[in-house]
Structures are given as C-alpha cells and as structure tokens.
Image (tube, rainbow, N blue to C red; front, side, top):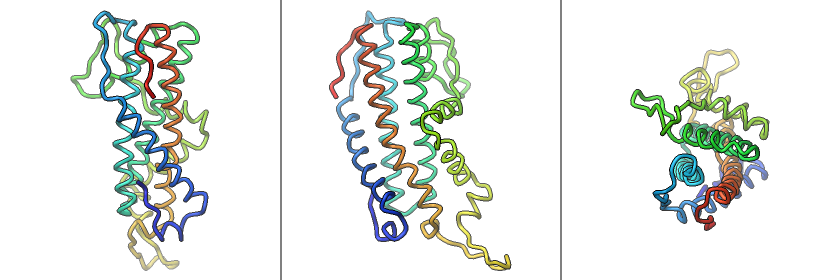
Length: 245
C-alpha cells in the first residue's frame, strides 16, 4: 500500500493526500479482480469472429494483470522515496490507461453499428502487435495493424483533458535530457555559480509528478468497469460465461 509519511504531510495538500488514500482503495479492488480471473477457457467451436467475446476478455484481463504489476512497482518506489522510478512507472500507467480506453471506445462504437468484423480485427491488432521482426503478420485471415500509443493518448484526452500535459511532463522527467538529468536534481544559485545537487525526494516537482500514478489507477478502474460491461454485451451476442465480478 502507498504510505503517507511525514514528508508527504508537510509537502502535499489535503486533496493530494486524499488521492493517495483513494488510490490504495482502487488498488485493492483491481487486485481482487486479478485474483478472481486466473483462467479463461475458449470452446473449440469458437473460431474467427465467434471468438470475439473470449478474445476481448483475454485482452482486457491482460491489461488488469499488467496494471497490478506496474502499480505494485509504483508502490515500492514511492514508499522507498525513489521518485524518479515512480515517475517513469507513472508514465507507463498513463499509457496503459489510454490503451484500454482506446480499445473500449472503439469496440463499443463498432458494436453499436453491428460492425463485429471490425471489432474482431481491433482486438486482434491490440493483442498481437509488436515491433520485433518476428511479429505476427496475420491472425487467421486478418492482417495485423499496429495501434500507436499516441492515437490512444489523443483519444483519452477528449475525456480527460489534462492527460497529455501530464504525459508530456512525465516524459521530460523520464528521458535523460535537461529536465530529467539536471532540472530535477539541482538547485542553481542566482549568480549561476553554485550548483547544489539534491535527492529527488527533496524536490516538490518530483512528488507532484509521482502523484500522477495514484490519480490514474482510479481512471483505469473506471475503464475496467466499462470493459466488463462491453464483455457482457459481446457474450449476449456470441455466447460465453457471465462475469463473476
């Protein structure tokens, strides 16, 4: 669980402390979902688009497992005051949230228009895409197409207008450039002749940046709830066992 230490109480506002408390609650809810869903069996007769409800369930469950693993790393780095690592993980948490949002929004739109072949292809694209030379080119008759993370970020920006700004800020800290190397670790005197090096935990900019991870787990949980509802709709069409959570 995310700890609230004296340095946090001294540095953060009451609203920011509340974010940490709510993030802990969301983490426990998300972990419970992962613990309940450990096996998905696909009937052998489900082939092609008939596998859509199962393929989608497999994909969003993978997102849940990924997010739990990332957030556990976020907890460890936050509690150990390794705020650089927390910021890097926070950036990845944003990407994961944007990806599942992109998937759910596009899939829901296809379902509303009974475009199940397009929905089937989208799930295949997002499940099988990679940049390695050995990446799969096809899934059955479908040609695999990469979904770029910036497309997902621009889509979720329409719902949460602050996301790209937060993502850009975390990117500056994550990369070994001026902000990520000197800006976050130094205090420069007015005459520019003295450079004092600081631990990242001594600077407010790091702590505020790290809170992004705590904010986004609640947004991710909302996306998981949407995913569960979409899965139920797909199973009404294609069949399958109802959700147990």
